Image 1 (spheres, helix red, strand yellow):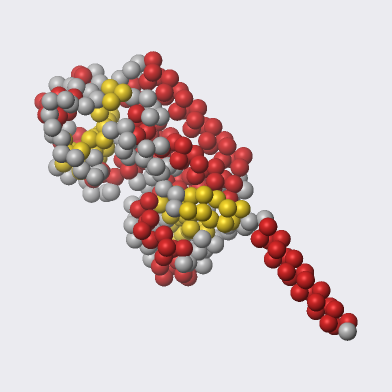
Image 2 (spheres, rainbow, N blue to C red):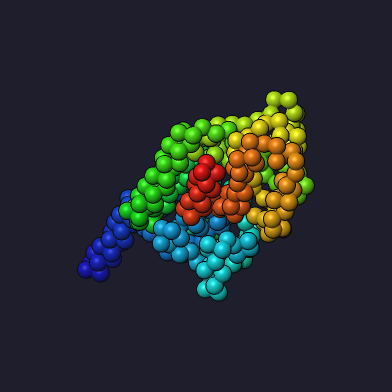
Length: 305
């Protein structure tokens, strides 16, 4: 009789422990759904540079990252102790299975792999809304700060960026300037407006929009294909140029050669030395990160000075 009671008691304690554990789990909203987190994740895999940039600033070291095109600011993750998950678009599933992560943080370039990744471990999708950069980024930072039990550090990082954004916006409001944001990709040039991957320029930073009314554009999914005649006709006060080839390691400095022409030189931006070549990795590969957002703000602040 005693052994039966003891067995019943042990079962009861086990059920109570399971119930208690479940009761303390918290649900977090991310870009593609929700995730339940119970306890601080210990074996974390990060599959994008923006989220890696932030968790690194937070003081969290993942066990695996994509090492292809790894930014210099995150070069410590080249070390052998960090497993290589592949590239920003392709993941080595065998590596992930072997690592047995308790949390995977993925980004927009892997959105289509969300279900497959979820079969391996819980996935937090860290996707930045191009129409609302800072609010989206801030929500992710707050969530991850809580998930890793580093709320105070997270608040500090959010406060630092918010202060810099406020100062930048005040500077651009005091000196209103029309900005044209373009991307150089091979021999093509595309422009981006307030609702695009470069919305930060206009929404948070407060620049006005510069665009041509007389020269046509060819609309595309990732920016409007424009000519140098378009740039000349738009007459931007500030010309912001992203060299995509440089961002993905194809070339170095080709955009500067491409934009060294009479049409660009005729703009107020050129005459007043307000052509800024954006830090390519920060703007294109690791947006949504702490270090990268600092660099983005610095680029725009320097464009005004």
